[in-house]
Amino acid sequence: MELKDKVVIVTGAAQGLGRQFALACAENGMKVALSDMNTEVLEKTRKECEDKGVEARGYELNVTQEADVEAVYSQVVSDFGTLDATINNAGILRDGLLVKVKDGNVQKFSMSKWQAVIDTNLTGVFLCAREAAANFLELKKPGVIINIASVARSGNFGQSNYSAAKAGVSAMTVLWAQELAQHGIRVAAIAPGFTATEMVVSLRDDIKENFVKSIPLRRFAEPSEMSDGALFILRNDYYSGRVLEIDGGVRIWAISQVRRKTHCFTLWQFWFGVQAGWLLNTSLAPLIRWSRWLIVSCLLPLFPGYIAVFPVV
Ligand SMILES: NC(=O)c1ccc[n+]([C@@H]2O[C@H](COP(=O)([O-])OP(=O)(O)OC[C@H]3O[C@@H](n4cnc5c(N)ncnc54)[C@H](O)[C@@H]3O)[C@@H](O)[C@H]2O)c1
Image (cartoon, rainbow, N blue to C red):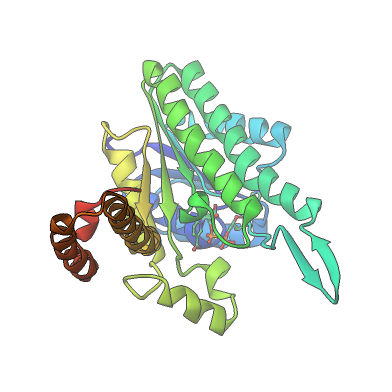
């Protein structure tokens, strides 16, 4: 899609990634409709976008409220005369363990924390995507829906609610791309890794240090690295039904650690199985043969390529 003069709605646009998505779209000549619950901060972002020489309007919106979402999307179409894209970015964190023991008592993860994140991060994305798609159909034109997921969609410690919501967002992205392609509507998602926004910067220093250690590139992402992904999706007319991971390698790292252990275990299981089989048959020739296997089995894990030799998981 050629971006100049196209109209995009960004939710959660007051600060963080939403602000960055709005600024990047404005820099590339798009007209921006910014929405957020925090109207005071939103106005600052709106002004920053306007300073880039494009039309920029702010809308108070809580993405969990169906009627409000419907009203704001209609208002945007009426104000700008059209709609070309939505970036469904608004999201919150309410972390906690499923259960934990404190002072000898078992504590359960609260329903209010669960529901708050599901309402904002899952239902909010559903409502905004549905409204954007309905408007594209009414306007009889193609459009682009970008959902903001997270690397946590694969499951992250202490984030039952957040991971469940982001996994749901990723799944909906794929199925909406399938359903809406016939109308010329593309749907894709971005799964950011840890990004230096208010959400992350406000964490305790020791927690941040631990996060950075888990990232192969050893730093948080810059918000602009996420907006580069959004611009790519908006521009590339053949990109749909995919979740673009921009995570500094963090997920690859986690999987490779699990694989490494699993493969060592599988290798040893295999070797002991073979030795047991030989003992039952009692013959000396295989002993010599399998001793060679023993040496190879011990050396194999030292070479990085061994994972390709035993692709078990
Ligand atoms: N920062 C990261 O490291 C990171 C990583 C992965 C995914 N994400 C995702 O990116 C998105 C933005 O995150 P961020 O880091 O910029 O967060 P942030 O807290 O800095 O900003 C979130 C914005 O959303 C708004 N918002 C919250 N609830 C809302 C609601 N119900 N309706 C409308 N607006 C609402 C807030 O007012 C705020 O302006 C979220 O969906 C988040 O899950 C962030």
